[in-house]
Amino acid sequence: MVRRVYALYYWPGLPGRGEFVRLALEYAGVDYEDIALIDPEAVAYFLTDLEIKTPAFAPPYLRDGDIVIGQTALILHYLGPKLWLAPQDEAERLWLHQVQMTMGDFVGEVHDTHHPIGPELYYEDQKREAERRSASFREHRMPKYLGWFERVLRRNPHGPTFLVGDSLTYADLSLFHILAGLDYAFPRAFASLIGEYPCVQELGEYVADQPELSAYLESDRRLPFNETGIFRHYPELDD
Amino acid sequence: MVRRVYALYYWPGLPGRGEFVRLALEYAGVDYEDIALIDPEAVAYFLTDLEIKTPAFAPPYLRDGDIVIGQTALILHYLGPKLWLAPQDEAERLWLHQVQMTMGDFVGEVHDTHHPIGPELYYEDQKREAERRSASFREHRMPKYLGWFERVLRRNPHGPTFLVGDSLTYADLSLFHILAGLDYAFPRAFASLIGEYPCVQELGEYVADQPELSAYLESDRRLPFNETGIFRHYPELDD
Image 1 (cartoon, each protein chain N blue to C red):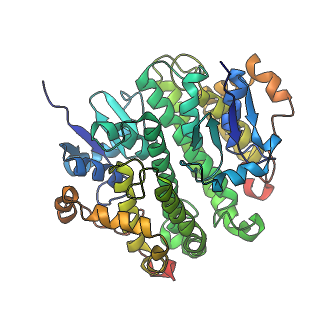
Image 2 (cartoon, chains in turn orange, yellow):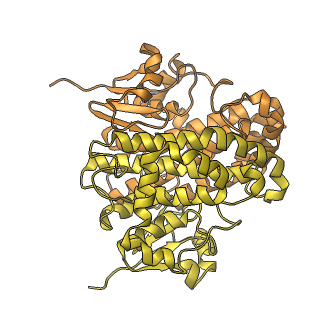
Image 3 (cartoon, one colour):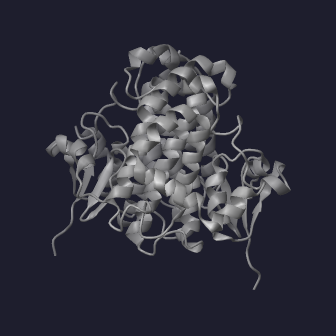
């Protein structure tokens, strides 16, 4: 039997939404092809390939044999049980998926802090609006979502160690990445807020310390945040 | 055996995201409680109820006995098979869910045309930014998503009648509502664009004509679009 290798399609050069999938694959230690490193043009070409009957709207998408799946949260919902990063219980799996979908909404709002008018325009062409949206994000949206993650942890019937269930899931990995991204993009606002969410903070530190992840985090496969990605650091948006 | 009745929690007075769930329940002809009509305060209260171990970030959420589910696309993914509005095939169900999630992204972008800075501010306080974002939406985003729906229909191996599979699903109902909403919010832009997407247009008309839906569409349970909802008509945003 030939071992099938997952193929991850995402834009080269930035962690972006692909990183949520990459973290799950790396943590699980499974073989996968990161197409951006092998054939970057294939990422965009793939969208136009008429043979694909399930054409994702945008990257990331995952190929597993004949199956092609888009939408970050759905990719993780699909991979979760295969990578032992989801609970056994069906109701818990649905809840995990819901938590991840809500993280996706949050990530969309993070994106829009620097692109509040449209993705086809440069940041410089929507900078004034970005400053206004970022102020709202720092004051209202970031605390609202962090407070929700804290609530999810505190209401977990298994205790506040993990978001869902009694062991680490892909959503915990994603939350770790979101915290790292917020700390990169909004260091001032994040530092002044995070102390109010102790369970969230603790989970972020727990994930960062996992031996399954440390080799990846120290490797050059872990792409640094930069100003072509979702989490961007523009000092004027954090002030 | 007592027949369990679904309870839908959504803000009163606007179709909003709740309408995507309502359309599925109404089309299927199942009993459900629309909590906004029975006890509107329960919608917000529910979010703070400590007994709920799966607290949704925001409405809509659905209660089915002990199960409480949020995220519009996830509610529909859960209800789909029970309402005979999803294919039997597991891979097709995942693809259907992906299509619905992408519709959710589009609906989020529609919302942000009138709220590009933040949901806590009135439209009037972000009107200038809304005009800029709406121009980008009309020119880039609306055609991009409509084009994607057309592509999904054309690539359906069963033919271009339905988005997924060979019979009507909840995503077809949702697309109908999105088209109605775009026509309400952006009548000029929508009229000039829709002819380029004949399969999309045809599906919208097909759904509107379904006898399972007509009683609902003519009833006062079908809330009209208005300027507290997601699809809002401000003439200056369509010009």
